[in-house]
Amino acid sequence: MKKFFHYTILFINSFALLGIFFSLISPFMNPNVFWIISFFGWFFPVFVISLFAFSIFWFFYNKKYMWINIVFLLLSSSYTSRFVSISSSDSTGEEINIMSYNVRLFNKWNWLNIENVDEEIMKFVEKEKVDVFCIQEYYNPKKDLNFNFKYSTTDLQGSKENQHMAIYSNYRIINDTINSDLEDMNNTCIFSDIIIEMDTIRVYNIHLASNLFNPDDIKDIISTEIEKEKIKNGVFGFTKRIKRSFKTREKEVCLIKKHIENSPYPTIICGDFNDTPVSYAYQNLRKNKLDGFIESGNGFGATFTKIPSLRIDYILYDKQFSSSDFITHQKVLSDHRAISCKIKLD
Image (cartoon, rainbow, N blue to C red; front, top):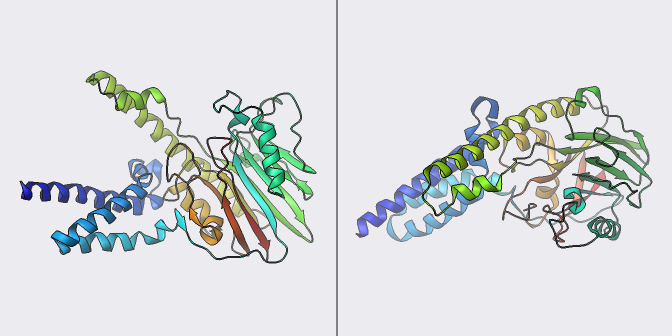
């Protein structure tokens, strides 16, 4: 019985090793070539925790297997820092306070049992003394949202009452036109060219394709009732949606990356990537840039309130900048947490 137990643990351990191996290569694998690899990146934290637990077990029973786990944990350490950060950076000199927030249409459909969420978010932003505010899933319910900013860029691809992206700024915006290369990217990317003292920077606000989870699919998959057809439909629906989202994000990232590379100004990228730090989307958008959370954050970076450890919101910036005081705000006014950091224009 004891031997059977050890073999069972070894089998599960082997699956975790295989999973973390696929996680490590997933950021470099184009989803339109082999999308299933991208799926493993979502479970990277689970694989890391599993291997750590198995290492403790094998320490007492078979150190040979323990060392195999440790090797993979060491190989994945650079990715682990994308989820948990320890920084001692302090605010220095002139900086701008930039915030990114998926506000989920300001609670349009009453997902949260909170009244006047738009007003609560406005108070929150004012209290945090934000200089540049990037909003995803923006919604203007036929009234002016009284954000205390002098300038703004809004996505006009939707109706006036149902705009989807916005950038508010205390600094002058000199260009807020959506470039023709991005016009087909419905509610996915806008930018503002902003003058700060003698410098001009370009701020991108991004909202990549959602995973479009259908609650009924998940319910069918985990159903305790043995209905093969129901479970099959749930698995098929879930797989179809996740496959489509991975592939769509790859196309969006390709267009956005090309646009960023042609920017005449230094750039900052804010937004909801709908993907983890161990993903093709993140890896490509972060190329030649720094991640505010890694550089100046502390603790866990989870930004999606419904799934623990899921970090899908980011502030990235060119290496000529530096950041301090990255915060993953815990105030719940959406299904996402707001993130902010102070960026110094070196």
